[in-house]
Length: 406
Picture (cartoon, rainbow, N blue to C red):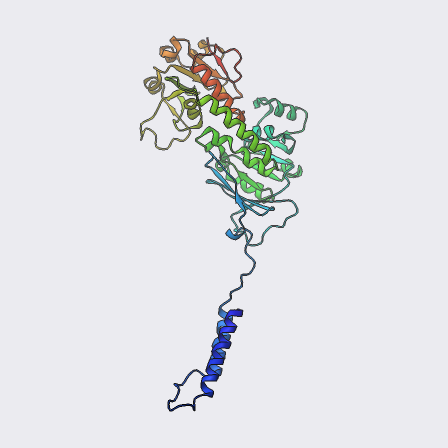
């Protein structure tokens, strides 16, 4: 504004000086704008133009002070705005502004941004896969509620918390005990994308002023990407240093496996459904990627168009499974959904066609233990066990996540 005023003053000076010297010489100066006209123009410009910036919104680019470095995760991003504000963007679910304790909530926020106010001391984890991140970070005491029953947990620390009453089962994710959740002082609900099948639950929690964050870690195609979500929960719970250190160690462990991983073998990962189908993972799913990192080629692979809508897994007929995987060197039965099996005979009872598979005839049928999927942070260890199996370096003794069927 000062520059504008100086410019106007200089213009007035020139006009006045020009007018005062008009009698010198024979020429008559051209008529210029009057003083009043210039003054009116200056006043109008002063109203329309300003060189001074007012205060910027908290989430403006000018206030961004950094971004979280992510090596493999693709389903979320994090931006920092000073010490008090962190913006988390989760793919396909929305944006979440984490506000540090003592800081005010910005007034100019987009209405679609969910505000999460620290600290979070009474969290409701309806997304069971997140629980292992909390266990690893040593903050299970901040989880007051779960939507998974005691008997369905395989993480000892969680079972103990439920048994001792430090954590409560509050009903399935689609039918929680709202009264208990509210009276417990719940300050954050973490849901999986399953909540979109029951949107009224999310709406009800929000009506009770309980912020809901929908997490997306299971959609990561890289096992290290899924593991990197521990950084997000480190941010929410002021455990960034611990989360970063754990992740770096896991990367090193996995790299030590992949450096010697090639085996030239093939492996199928599956389970039999209750209606006689076979559930298999898609080849770009993180489990299939773990098998690849462990040195085996994942089968079955699907041609483009086999199932355009399938995501991480698909159910096919047993005849199709036979066609695509009967020659696999290894069969790995996923017991997480249908329960552990004790022997090959148990597997034959589920589907007798499995007898004709190469891996069955050669004694290379393995089963996952029930806690494999709840132990999200064990991705590197599970991949290492896959490699031990594929390379023929184990008879199954000493493994934590796999066992051999006989």
